[in-house]
Image 1 (cartoon, one colour):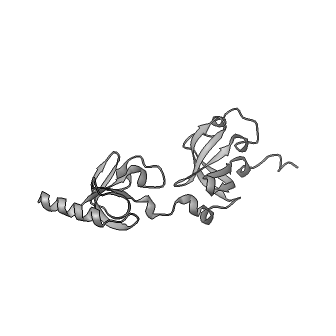
Image 2 (cartoon, one colour):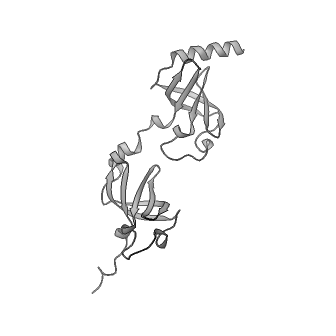
Image 3 (cartoon, helix red, strand yellow):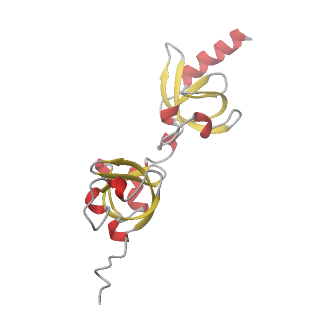
Amino acid sequence: MQEWRDAQKARLVEELQVGETRKGVVTGISSFGAFVDLGGADGLVHISEMSWGPVAKPDDVVSIGDELDVFVLRVDVENKKIALSLRRLEPEPWETIHERLHVDDIVDAQITKLTNFGAFARVEGNIEGLIHISELSDRVIGHPREVVQEGEDVKLKVLRIEPERRRLGLSLKQTMDNPFLNYN
């Protein structure tokens, strides 16, 4: 049986082409990825190739027995190793951002990180942007934590979209009512 499996693996490794899509079945999951049987040989979908966004654990994305399409990333014929990807089957989110987001849009977001110069917020699954400290509040603040906390859900205005630099400029203060504008 092992001889047959070794022969199958050798044949499959020889015929696989980088860039093609294959069907497979998840046969194992580890902390660093998932093993997918391609019909005689297992390939590895590394955790970094599971999604364009962050993945904490591979079993958040796949389960043993799942049938799925995978993208052949690399084939090491000599060592009979196959690197696979799930995320390469989807367009990279920054490549299509202008189809979903536009300057002046108001978007739902979640604060993901605070820094001295502002706060980062996730506006959709895999796209994060920066709210510069000057765009957090109408008043002068010393640190973003005076206005927002990590994990907080907020509405933000899109100021800039720079897909080539993977940058998104956001504003919290431009979504808030300004009491000075309403003064009679």
